[in-house]
Length: 259
Image (cartoon, rainbow, N blue to C red; front, side):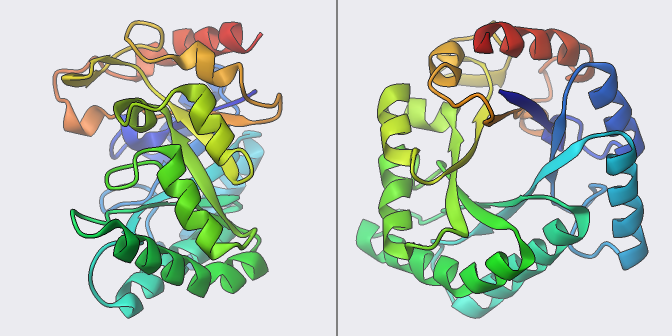
């Protein structure tokens, strides 16, 4: 198991400080949140991209993914969404990241329509993703929380440059067991996001192992070389403890579970 954490838990922190925290606390990779106000975003100039890549390489850290917010199943026109996704793919390639994360955001409408929108848009960027050496990963989230929901879309796409990101919280909220999710996503899986929370009705983030999510059951299913990324949703929960002091114990906890 290879360990990464998401910069979502350190909102707005400069990349050099994030890198220092990762190297000081035993993390091998970073999931880079791609949003305004963050060090990584599609409007980054070319020289800033080069500096970021050199800094990550010098520290021996893997830029696992650019974690964007494109909703590939969302109602609306295809063009702007595809353009935004292509921008994020180019950003990931410039940084040396293997993946770009996307959300479904299919809304409350008929499932078949949302599936078709997502599959059409993902297929439209698959050739560019392949050329750039970056995979697009559809996360188990919002309208497609369960692994079976994401797998249904990916089976429609049928392209190796498009895969799945397993967010353990959302598959749990969908009532899916880790073994069922693994069975659905195994042919498509890019990597896994873990976290821990107070409970189903209170999603305040907690240190790994302090909440109710079956992290151990999840990671024991994974192959030894699979990336596992800790996503600590600090921006949405201002009362949550700061992430930085939790990084060392979090890496140790995941290492024990994976052993």
